[in-house]
Image: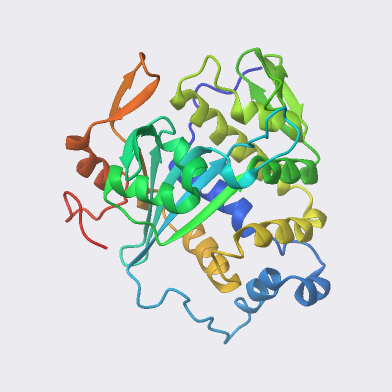
Length: 320
């Protein structure tokens, strides 16, 4: 059985699905309150905010918005494939997410990993490679060159984290849209999946998300969104796994967000109506000769507005 043709992936579902993994949505649904309160700071904060008379401080008070650069990174290996070097891995997926506190909205802009960009010292390269050359700071500069936007925070997710989450969930049931076969011995990536419904383990899930041999960037992005929603559903089935999930999530975001900020963003998105969440992509054309995305600078300002990264009044770049 294939997914229903009438089923659509709303932007709200995608954003909430991702923030579920980051922010441990519903982590207090079980009867383990006492132990959770002592052991897990996110759980403690979430319980307290529901206590009558308790008014948690808004950690973003005084800010109109918050823009986050969200990156998913490949695994990069030494010559011969012996050792993983996560520090210099390529940025496999790049997104800008804007939390608009003033107008109660969320925007998301997809930046194709093959977008051509020029930054000091690296002319005419793909933005995915900037993380290899200079880490998060160079990617931030690349994003600024392409969009005029400088993010306030950065979250980097690698596939080792995704694998841990899937294994914690006990696997994820997804629909594989076609046979997927690809081998990269040096990169330790082996993908062999058959078309149809399957329960994927950690390694298979990583392959499902990374496969791009015969896919466009749009097809790959949509498949990753489907997987994200399926993983969210799996994690919600067994509350006993949520403490370990909370630990993994906080371990990933602790350098960028406080516990109070994590909780606030979770509830901010959860309470938004669907029409207050937008999404878009960086406009351009595909250059088959160099296998790269050529961004159309003339259309970027409008794309930023339509994706909710810039307010409606700012048709064009505005300083931050």
